[in-house]
Length: 183
Image (cartoon, rainbow, N blue to C red):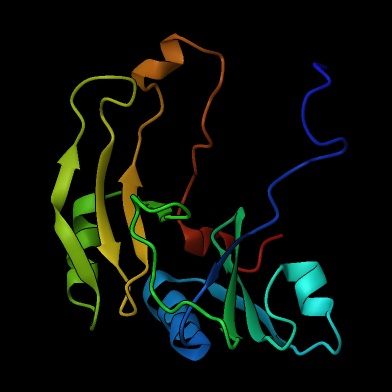
């Protein structure tokens, strides 16, 4: 035990993204990506709760959905209504820029599937990294109908970086459908 890190931390519980239309995002993640909807709720607190707890305008409201993506990832989606809301998505190069990477068995087949989905934009063709710490990684980015960027990735076990460290990245087994309803 090194004494570093958050005491008692056992796992990442979820990642969260703010979306412009919660219904559209839930439909996209469940119907196109294959997530399962766990629950929805509305956060409409009185007083300054929203400012104190979420660092947003005190009058902001939020519709929230929690989804399950495969065996280990929970995805929380927020749709805020706030008077000072910025409505421009950050680019990956902007501070706060982000993307969600989905490990797939076949990047090319997944990219082809996404190209056929209405409103989805696949950013170029899949590429394989040929040298460096993640040689063998095959990947391509895509954008949702509202512009959020995601990545398809297949980084096989045994990447070159593993020769330099004992750290291993999570390697999924089976498909998401193998884990439906699993806890």
